[in-house]
Image 1 (cartoon, rainbow, N blue to C red):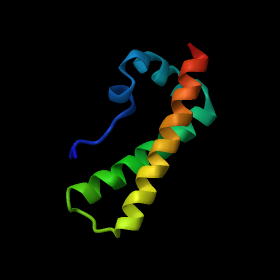
Image 2: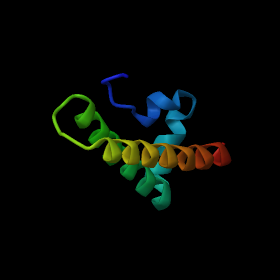
Image 3: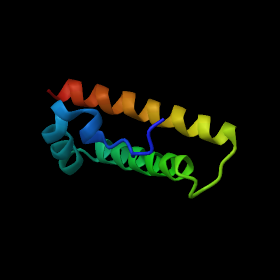
Length: 80
């Protein structure tokens, strides 16, 4: 388990420019990216012990992050 937050540009380095463009020009993508960032930061705080969470909450957050990441990837690959 890594205690480093997963940033979209690091997860999808080949789409770094597209991520920036879509954040600026696509409201739906920007909303997804913001939600991903929020969930990702919460997971990071749990992993590092800054916040406590039940196992169920941790699993739910990880599922939510994966779902957001899948939807973000679909938009990125469609926009290329």
